[in-house]
Image 1 (cartoon, helix red, strand yellow):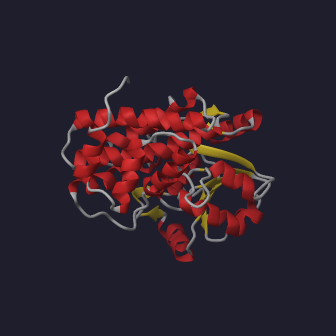
Image 2: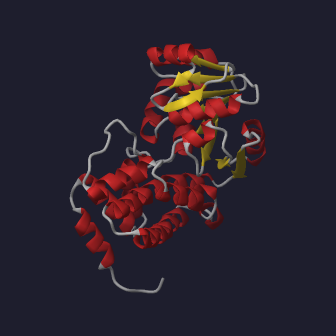
Length: 321
């Protein structure tokens, strides 16, 4: 076994299924023993990924120690859970390739996943898997292209080769900052896009918001040292387009509910909620103007209404694009 996926949510399960299709043995860790037992017995994850069967080459366990000999570890868990997970288990995982699949900024520290891995597991090789993808598409074997970000060019190429499949195509970059921020900030813009559609403001307004949101994504990313071409690639623009235009996106659905004044499933992880707050903190620190992110953060905390948010954006001073 060369790969293990830690986290048996929709995305983690989908990755395990996709990587096992070629016949390789893949490990899948579930946090709860009951969930692990159900996955082993039923070979399905009906709540998170209905209709998808786990190949027999996927071995499921609730014991991380069962994967001690596995060199490549995919960390498929929410961004706000990553630091706590590594604080508990980082000593066991140190020295291996740790590939974060989270998209966000840690609210407590303002760090991205690579920095959290490096701080907790100094002997590990941090990497990031991100880009435009839905778990259901990956699990069904539909063509998907992702970004693999790793600061070490040589070892990044080795990981790229190990994880790529005929329908899961990985493009490599050493710009971990750009890849992390693209994947994190697009979730904030996706919430805003959902608000626009939920409030009945129309597709033209959504297109305008996506464009201005992408501009502020670039402003913050460049201030933090990211490369322009990274944000223009899969992990930035590609992921932004997908999550702002599809109801499969949890962030878009959450924003749609906000805009429509409807309820939303409290058990569904919406990474853009915490990321909006973290992004605003970073923007203030670097004197970056991020009106879309500020609007999302204010809406989420309930300090403004949807009409007030729309009015605030529309009343901004006219200027050059």
